[in-house]
Length: 312
Ligand code: CP
Image (cartoon, rainbow, N blue to C red; front, side, top):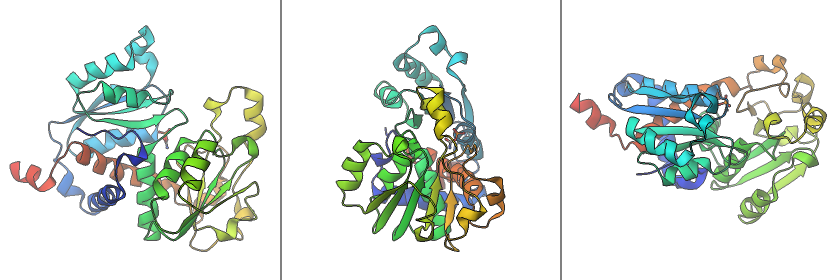
């Protein structure tokens, strides 16, 4: 039995196979529409979510399976003090696979150690968000045609933004990737990622505070929200929340074929005027998330599509 807790739980080859599968799903929806008949996905969300929870549920429904779960800790027995370990033991009796989001770093890992079913980390605190990474890789590969030879700008809250942490871990495995880290000092990438991932793998990167000065170099601009829920005080959040706002002026020097990604939700960091720019890819990215999660469910449940269809 396999889980997905960290973006490195799959090899680069396995990630490429998963992205191939997601691409085939996108192009041949009907072929996959009943392959999870009789299977259940549990979504255990101890933190708010729109995209991740609902795209997981849409993914399982698109595969012909069923879904159950809770969307907040308050509506589960966590509110009575039940541990993650006990919860997953119980959910293992009710479902075939689960996706868990939790505010505490490492909670999905703990769950996986006590689980009878595959556990997918759907975001743990400021740590990792590996299924967002699968979504991001699929989006970049689909729109740019490659995952190598790219200059990636990561902008905003690089300290608390778990999507950025996971994406860096995944992208350093591809050839000739360089990063431009655009953040104020207070929201800079944590040392453990800078040193253990970028420096340790000899990945070229620069840290800057001005978005305008680097815009013309980027193939991908990955915007992020300042993560209000991870701040210790409101004052710091208010001071930093609008530090970057991508608008038409800032796009003037961007390459014609640059793509703008954002894991969403957006607050103010991308002006709505940018939504009409053909380079804005963040809503497409959310759609790619369904295909990536469908491919992940099939992979972790070890469902062979041709066999499943032949049996029906
Ligand atoms: N991208 C993402 O994780 O969005 P949600 O918080 O809405 O799930």
